[in-house]
Image (cartoon, rainbow, N blue to C red; front, side):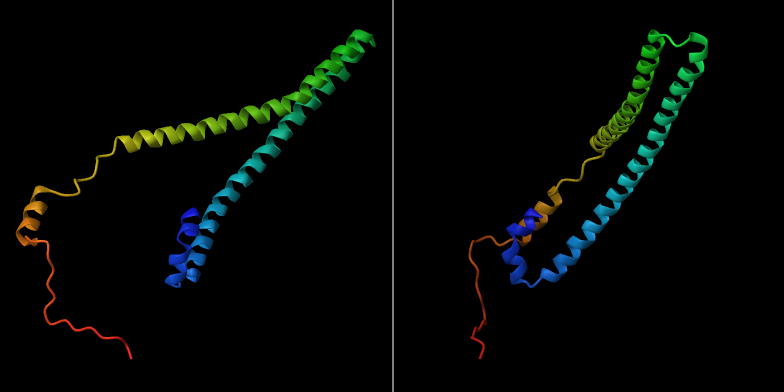
Length: 157
């Protein structure tokens, strides 16, 4: 986008505004498609993790209610049951955080793996080979002058 702003005078001079607008729109659509898929996957994962956390909370509450009859209604039991339920409430946040960090780590490791593959690629051929230099030396002008023969110029009428 910055290159477009820097070259806006050239774009206008060649009347390429419409072409560039279509190109930017198509590139933006491709980028937004990838973002939409990523966002959808994150929403799907968030719902599943929230469901898992809710099931842990329900399990903690059911255990506290079930054990109440066995342990009695003592203040110590109530405190421990409350502590267990509050820790169960934090499980959802911890689960969300750990899964997101693991997926981010995996994405970054894929980037590192890709860099490793790029460094193992065979490099391109040289820009100029000795055969190119020899062929150019034979045809290349020996003097630094240009001659125009039979050239006429005029203004448009």
